[in-house]
Image 1 (cartoon, one colour):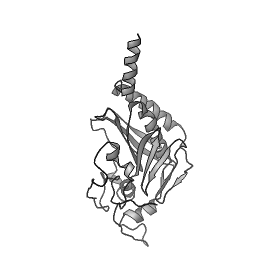
Image 2: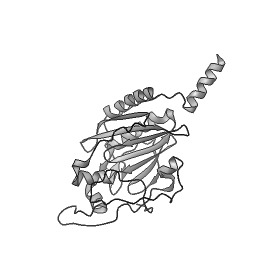
Image 3: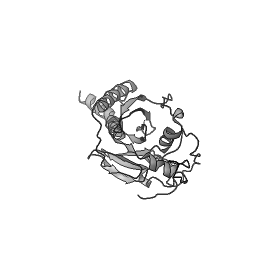
Image 4: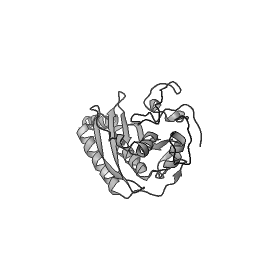
Length: 243
């Protein structure tokens, strides 16, 4: 009997007891509980482009104009403002689509949530098993997206905090368009700038969370902002600019 409990404990610690059906069910229950609660519309973090509320238990490690690295129960969580969605919502609303499962997830959930700006938005949660027995969590919401690599037992809590923060986000559409679009914010103002000129702090790059390449080695060409953008890389940037 003693041997049985030792084996069971080891299974729980290594996450080997995870099963997709169980994870899907518990995640769904946790998300429903979060969505049914009132959104925390008392933003305590204000940036030039957006504001949000994070519970006192959520630590903030690094920050740029469009990104944050949080610490949720000792788990690093990257949040990025989805600039392409904000611009597409303004100029190309027809190209906005709800993310769908790609078949590689061990769990995928999607639905709608109400936010502090009074609107209802789509969200999706994807969970993948990594080679190192950790789980990659990808949460897409209307204005911000979240990424993290976590142990199985932490998935529910981390996703809950991601969605709580997402519901509290309010964006400054005018400022975003002035910064990142060559289209006029109104008929009297026009400003053209290059898209994404800052880099998420070194400890917050997604490839570092997953054990990828060294900082500074990840390069991608950015698309034109004046065309509808569906797959814009909103994490990787060229140089770090403090607010």
